[in-house]
Length: 151
Image (cartoon, rainbow, N blue to C red):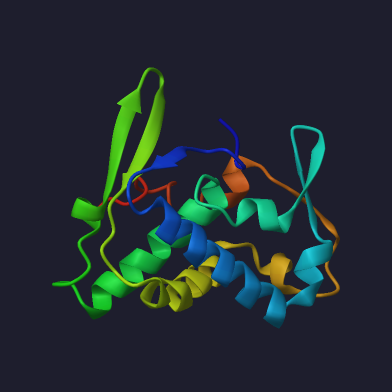
């Protein structure tokens, strides 16, 4: 397990998440073009930011968790996180099974906001360093006090 490959994501809504994260990445780099030059150091390798804006990364799952919490605060009757996201145990690994029933355009704006709220402030500064260390303690903002996608 690493930040880049924190959990396998399966289920009928995997394509929805792929589309939402792709649109979110486009929105992030449109506002912050310097993100295309960022490299994250993980396990001795440099990885581009785009690779972390995918459902299986801890960075993305943390942003998704924040996005769904925000959405649930606005419309608790419609946003059913406990029914949409379930952790399954496969051997020693946990797999996230996703069955969301919302349009992708509902998810993109809160997902973008989720990235802003859960990422280090330095990431959004154009003059910041071009290399970040991808360590779990840096990105595990939400999971320090509770598990991802818990009530």
